[in-house]
Image (cartoon, rainbow, N blue to C red; front, side):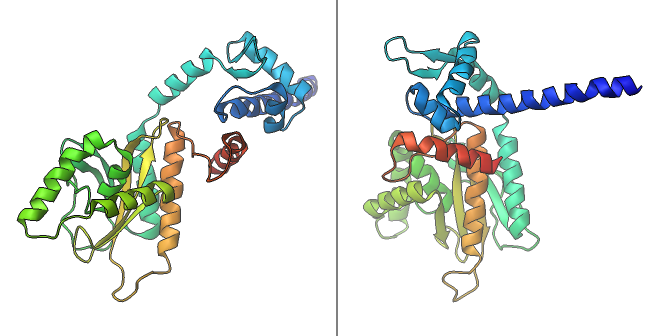
Length: 293
């Protein structure tokens, strides 16, 4: 028995060293995955936090297994076809609806708010899941509810991310209905400006525009191409006379954290920050992934 324990000790040490090696290898792959193009050896080592000679050993093994390819002319390295197959397999095994629903539940339970999960349907943004708070919000919104594009927080998020070819017919219909109701014409220049703000800030805030006295904040779940897959929307009623409730910033922060977390799970990566070269975005993205995980 004692001999077995003694033999197990060295094995445990070797296993730990093996795990550390895998973690370093993942950093090498992350460096390549976060770059917009193939990278030279020294740059890969710098991004992975190891020496160029260490990076070379990892890259040599990765090349043999098809994880990495090397350009013959430049000597630079990029991801290989095996990683592409891994990515496709990972996406096929990822249940976006479940991940989004779990994120919705966490937000609503943290703030005791009513929340919706919306997807793009035949008639526009459509609620496919509802999480109610412990108190009534005084609205008949529910499963199957369809939201307007230009008068709801959910709709504006879709409008900000979908191609015009998809949204233009619905916008035309909404503007015509508004005209028949005698409402003032919609300022499309202002709507486009709001969409730019939504893309930049990552969320939309609607204060009593769609349903009187009911406000909403919404944020997108984006796929690996940056296309909107779904939208999480929180609905609430602010206290009268309070233009900027103290907990609104906290709600927005959690909403963004959860929706961006789901987006990363399906392959989305945040774009470079304003004025930041794409090459410098790679370590920042890696740090954000580590923080989320």
